[in-house]
Length: 445
Image 1 (cartoon, rainbow, N blue to C red):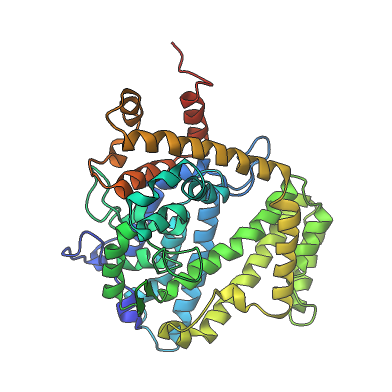
Image 2 (spheres, one colour):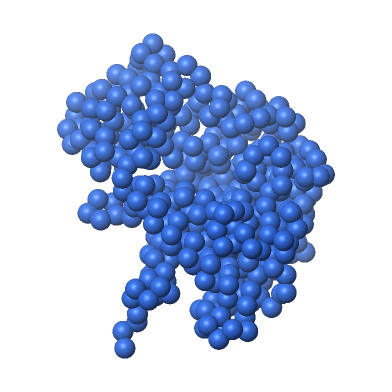
């Protein structure tokens, strides 16, 4: 693969349009970022759980704040790699490829757009409805590949669909993002029936769209059936930005909520620095901790230091393996190749997170509630779209936004539209709609 082809400002659905960035205040990739910032799906992330239930008196991360932080880290990763490539004469300064930071930051903004309400359990709740819930009745009404899309719902594939699919009443190309930004969000560039794991990057409904993007950018096709491509190289940096922010920020949230003590949190963060190799860094950290006495500010400073360390490490890993990455033979994530002190510290963070954070009562309770709420909404709306002639169904269908309505007779398309609607809901909207449908609450008369 070549950077000159991998970085393209061509927009999905607007392939015949030409641009002259030198006359504009923003490049096409910066426009992608702005287009996402102002989009409704991005705004809705503020009311979607990241890990902990949405805030009461203590504000913790939601999907929106997480995405903004990931975009910030992603921009740094992209700019640092671009500068190394420029210094090594592998790309030209001021060329489209030099804008990797802008592309990655836009992709980072979009990486969680396809995730449903109620945190990580939302994907499982949707899948379970079709695997063992009322949705099993529809299996024999679609192809095996279509069925796999529904019974193994994948937020990553849903993000690509949300951004690229032409929903009812909308324009061709979805949000008309550049090909490079779209390709950079697809962590698993293969279809759902791919053997080797649950995660995948595009639904059956978007296969042709992804093939179009992949062909234009010169992504290497690894298999025809099931369809599989190698990753766009920038995906590794988007994924690294997410990995860096994900559990590192969860530790800080756990400290704010009192799940982890200040001493425990400091120990977890300081473990990322080697006494020999990072001696000057450690000295600087300790000097700052002597000046800053506020406990939350101390933790914030340590968290920032850890993120800085991980950014440098991930840039080095990418740079060392860039030939394999460009050849499409690099496997796993950049985090998989962490070594020494950083690897040990990250493993300890994972152990503590799963023991004390992800199994915390409030986290489990929101996941259980999510299963019940999403399962009910899916059942009610699926029954309605599959039986539109019924009086009750007509009432339910009237509650479906226009963009998710379809006259298609295909079972897959009808159920896909229901999943689109439910997965796009915020936590509070899903809860409110659940209560109204179940008769627990009614509008004021």
